[in-house]
Length: 495
Image 1 (cartoon, one colour):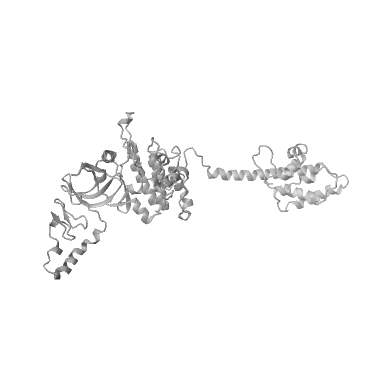
Image 2 (cartoon, one colour):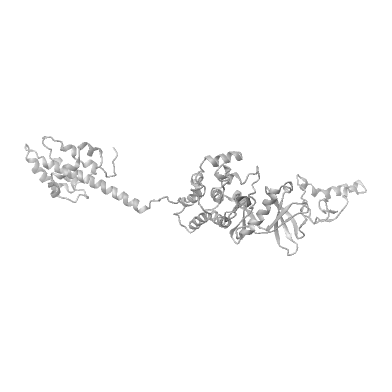
C-alpha cells in the first residue's frame, strides 16, 4: 500500500503519482490524527491534513494515474475527456518520449461497437500519413479490459479554446487554419476516409514559431469506404443505434436528415461552418437545444458573415467561399476538398475573384461601362433624330400669310449657335408640327436650330432637305412626347 505524503490518500500497489495533487507516492503512513498522544498535538494534525480539502470537492478518483499500460506507457496526468474516452499524458518508459493515450471510458469497455470504433480510429488515422493529422502509433488493452490508443502528444490547444478566447480571428489567420484543415481532410478523402465530426474541438493548434500548425484529431466516427466495388457489408460500418454521429452545430443537412449515403461533402460543410465561426465569432445557427439547431440547419439559410458582423469588413470573396461551402444542396457545394483548398489558396494570394458557383457568369466591369456609354449615345441619337424631324416638318409647311417668318429664321440662325444646349426630350418640337396653318412665331425656328446644334447630329441643311424620308420614321407625336423608343431598340424612357 502506498500513500500520498501531501493528502495522505492511500493507493494500491503499482501507483506512482497521486491523482489529486500529482505528488509522488511514498510508503504507507498511519493517519496523524489517530496517533497523537495528547490533545496538544491536535492543531498540528489539522494543519497537516488541511491541503487535502481543495481536491476533495467532487473530485473523482482516477485509477489510471501512475499506472503503466502495456508495460511501457506510464500515465502521468489526465488531459481531458470526450464522448468515448479520456485522454492522458503518458511517458514511454523505454525511450522517455511524451505521448498521449486515449482510453475508452469504463462504462463503454464492454461495448463492442465502441471498441471497434476506437480501433478503427487508430487504423484510419495512421493510414493517412499526413502532417496535419495526429500520428497514431499503438493500440492495446488495460488490465481491466479497456481499450486504448497511443498517439503523438500535442503541446497546444484546441481551436475551440482559441475561438472562445479571441474570436473573431483575423481573416488571414482564419484562412490559414482552414487551409491546413482542408489539406488534412483532402488527404483522408483521397483514401476514402470521411471524418464526419469536423469541429473546433477536433482541430488542435500546435505552435511552430509564430504560426499556427494544425493537427486534426478524433477519427472515431469516421467512415472508411473500400475501393473496387467490394461487398458493402465488408466495409467499416460502425453506426451505433441511438448515437448521434456528429455535432449538430457543424452537422450538414444530409446528416441532420439521417441519410445513409453520406460522403466527403459533409466535411466540406463542417469546415465552412468552422471558418464562419472563426471569422465572426458566432456559429450560423442558434437554438436552445439540439433539435432546434437541427431544424434550423434543415430549414433556414445562414446569414452571410457581412450581414451578421458588418463592422468587421469581411471581404466579399471570403464570404463567397464560406457560403458556397455551406450550401444546403450538396450538389451546389464544393464538390471536393481540393477545390475548397484551392480557393483558399487564391484568397491568401490576394485573388478576390473566387468563390462563385461553377457556371455562374460574373459580368466584367469594362463591358458594363461600355454599355452605359452606348445607352447614352442611343439617347442622344434619338433626341437628335426627333429634332431633325421637327426641323424638316417646320420647313415643309411654311406660312404663306407671313413670308417674313422665313426671313426671320434666316436672320435668327447665326444667333442660335451660342445658345445653351437643351436636353433631348425637352427639345422635341413635335407638338408644334401639328397640321395647322397658324403663323409660327419668330422664336420657334430659333429653338429648333438651337437644338439642332446638339453634338451627336452630324448632318446640316442637307439632312433637313431630305423631307420625304425623315417624317416617316418619327411616328405619332404622342409617342415621341412620352419617350417611347422605336421597336426593337431595347431601351425605354420613364414617363
